[in-house]
Amino acid sequence: MTDLAQADGTHTNGASVPVPVTTRKDWSSDQEVRWCPGCGDYTILAAMQMLLPDLGVRRENTVFLSGIGCAARLPYYMNTYGMHSIHGRAPAIATGLATTRPDLDVWVITGDGDSLSIGGNHLIHALRRNVNITILLFNNQIYGLTKGQYSPTSEMAKVTKSTPFGSLEQPFNPLSLALGAEASFVARSHDMDRKHMTEMFRRAHAHKGSSFVEIYQNCNVFNDGAFEQITGKDHRSEMLIPLVHGEPIRFGAEGEHGVVRGPDGAVDVVSVADVGESALLVHDEHRENPGLAFQLSRLSRGPYEPTPIGVFRDVDRPEYGLEMTRQVDAVIERKGEGDIAALLRSGSSWTVE
Image 1 (cartoon, rainbow, N blue to C red):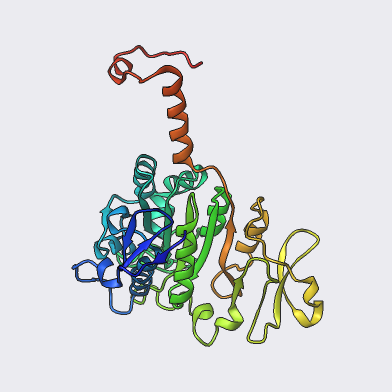
Image 2: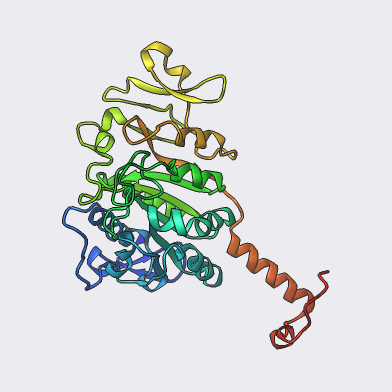
């Protein structure tokens, strides 16, 4: 999206209609922010409110939808249109809105409990259809709003109020799930790096189709320090693997570690000194086949091993709402305006030509 600031205090976003220049204050509602002190959600909210003025978009054309959970409070704090919907159903509501109002920017705010348990089917179908929505999943590996039960991303053996002897369930890997659903844009960030988050949100918004961003988010009350081993300031250089399109995948304070792809197709972490830079895997976020991106999403078994962050996949696919509109327009052009009343009163069978 092209965004040019003009002398009269407006933006033009590539169109002829000027967009007023805004600040973070314009995008912030008058509601008191009510998360627990120290919650990572504050940083995510700040990143969002600081990004939107730079996108050259209108508040009246921006919608935030959410389900249920701590993350789901975010629409209250945005001075835009929005809706706090029901548990897990935000992607379904967003699908209806995005397909009928393609002029709107539709953001879905969700958590690991909201979208990966009761909302699982709604999430994967929105992604596979490639609906033009941007989904931000706050992953804190716990149910925070209901006071600390294990969630679909909680690690095995996790002791919580609902698993007093330890969870027996294999957790979801949200990025693997999204890639398996053929999501056309998949990225990961964390709440300790506002600059990186902002860039991931910007990239996701610019993508046409379904965008999915997982954000490692700390719940300092019920699951404090879940990601400390990789996102802590003293650990990041050795534990976070930045994915940059077109560049060899390497990390470490001196870039001494790298990622290679073995003959069996699996990816692994190596010492660059042992294999040489030419052996390193070069990241290609535009690769049509999601297999390699899937392998990268599985590189870490949990937030205690070197973990990739950044854009895993960014490919072009037909956008669902646009294709649906074309299909409807083609039928109308072929047969003229339809008669909805006659359709509702018709029998239970029909002929498709």
